[in-house]
Image (cartoon, rainbow, N blue to C red; front, side):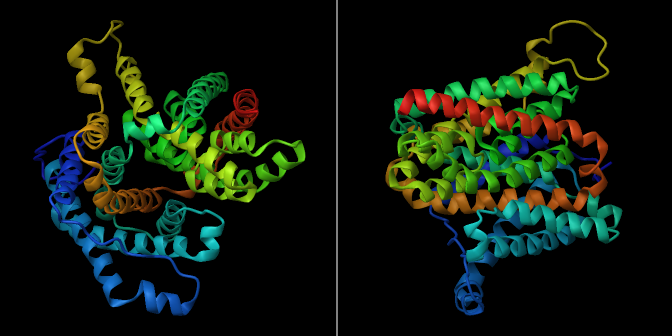
Length: 418
């Protein structure tokens, strides 16, 4: 049980909406933090760029922002401020190390994202050092994830959806629906619990890491299960990114078909861009359009899953009846409202010039919250929770669903783009 002050001011889901929009408001009124760079290829880059005084000021400014908001989150949700003041700076330092590792030129070439490094760092420390119980108890993984998801809504612009192109949207819709249903059906056949089934289905069919995080948030999912799914997404994206372009060449596919296939099959956006680049300029353009078309379905998917989860009978509930409107509202994850509201705000009420001015800074802060969350997940997760016999069936389900995704996406890409 978490260490609390026994005075919850605001439920966590409403807390993340309030804090997320407070951050957005700060940027909109002009309080924009310069985005620090973590890119480097040599020791001289580290000293001259990453560890340059001005860049360190930017890193410190980002720390000040997320530190203040994490403490506000702890205060509103009833966690002990004194413990949080000790724990958060440690998590932040570990997160910066993960960002530094991911910023290396060679690592970037492999498209290994910072979240995988933060997760691994957290796992190594959490499984080799006996952390005090109070340290683990004030970790605010869900708070960090959900604030990041609210901020993610600012990047889902409806005008960009229309620019993505009709064919890209058609493919995205068909692939997402067919792959999601197949994956969920397969998980149920393999008797995988419904919570993990939803995470796997969304991760494979929509947009990998972000979809898994959004689904976990919508159903208030177990962070250990989330970390397992994210690990599968990131690990499988690497071989797909490397081998699919060469397989497309062997099959004699055009750049248009190849791009649509890559964009619809590979789960992470960075890996899609890397694989599209290996094929050519046309393939890169088409793959990016298709991947973006899938990404914009994230909000709708999170909304649909959260409504479904609200109707689902919780474990232990014995009353066999449909939930009332008030019960649905009580179970409904309010961060979804924040995500959609942020998307609507930036789509219809904020001018393009202002969006251009703030989007880079908001994206950087959004990423930072996600990486902080995965550092926390690693710290509170034991290896035995990730590697055990019970995970064999989810692994089979994920790999089988991913294979189906590759095949069905190739068919649809060929029909639409050849």
